[in-house]
Length: 232
Image: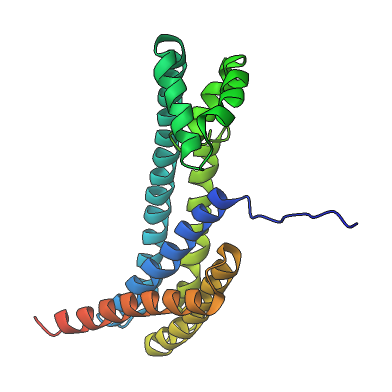
């Protein structure tokens, strides 16, 4: 009999960071470039402003990812320390919480009692069980904060360069804008489809959502810049 092998996607945190960085990297500089194209007639200014935004945005996004991951790690440590105290100081309450957890899965107390007895023989396993099934917390991998910051920042830079490349190669502003719109919408569609396939949400729906969000943001920025540029 062929063994049953379940395939699950296990790099959700890294994919989340890539999605955050790429989605903002594609959308924000795209909207900025489109907005500037509606106000100025210089590809050079668009490129310079876009590069400045990418630099600032990647640092800000990376720092945000670092602080978020650092906060998750600190929260996990704090909750684990609390659980370690409670299994010693409030043993009866923790035992009742074990029974309550199993009751959620329709496991009666008499069937859960042997599991509780085994956990009491291994306090560290007991704490890990409570962290996962009572609090829903998983221990963050070591170095997660630094990897998250770097992943988000690099993804932002990669995404942000896409809408600027046409402005670097085509010096006519209107033509560069058209190429930028085309290239960026294709990139957004590809990115959205890939994200949908990875997370299982459907490639077409994810691609359509990503294109609509990026397109609306860029269109709004362009129209607003053209409108404001009418005033002296």
